Amino acid sequence: MQKIAVCGKGGSGKSALVRLLANGLQARGLRVLVVDADESNTGLHRMMGFSSPPKALIDFMGGKQKLEKEIVTEIKAGGSEEKMELMKEVAELPIAEIPPEYILETEDGIKLVTVGKILMAMEGCACPMGIVSRSFLKKLRLEPDEIAVVDLEAGVEHFGRGVETSMDCVLVVVEPSIDSLDVAEKINEMAHDLDIADVWVVLNKIASEDIAARLKEHLTRNDIEVIGTIHQDPDIFESCLEGRPLRGGIAAEDVEKVLDFLFP
Image 1 (cartoon, rainbow, N blue to C red):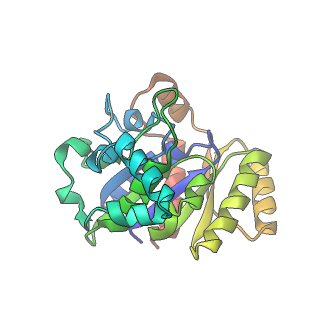
Image 2: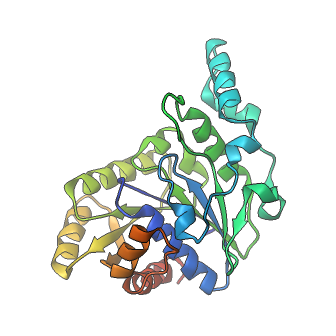
């Protein structure tokens, strides 16, 4: 297992889980690449200790405005976004060959790349970023001791773009809310439509074992397996409030159990 996608409802704690997974994987001797493919949330680089993100991969592939014009031209000519992806696909790309301005590295060796962000009003659609995410993740070549953890956009739109088609597994973050459960059920359904067999839930922001049991019961009735429970952690709350690097106390211990499941 070398490519792990993390998704879920907005605000469920996807980015925090991505950071904690990266920490845990690095501690187990793996070289970790974090891929920020969330077009809206801008906080992941701060969780990793960087004051600003790396240059966006969408610029590596020509820039958003250029790609957007090419998509419109292709569709008007009777083509599709899928054909655009073939036109713009990067060659098979080892991590070591990603240009330095597009990748950052923490002191402990965890690397970060970002696909791109919607930062301004009237900027246009996010379709080009979906193409870049799908192409980059499909062509990303990993060595046996390398692993990619991908922070996906909130909700389910990325499934419509097929971003997950090259992923080995999908982790769905579920917080205690009916909306979060609904999103998890939809993600599970769409993942199976894409023939992604390994789709699991990680519960997050859990205040009691009773709440965890109620969420697990609901998900089990819908044939969704829960592989871990991340309890409420004041360290994460403070880190997110202050915009400082995220380490986690209780939550980091809980993530170890998730990793034990993924890498028995």
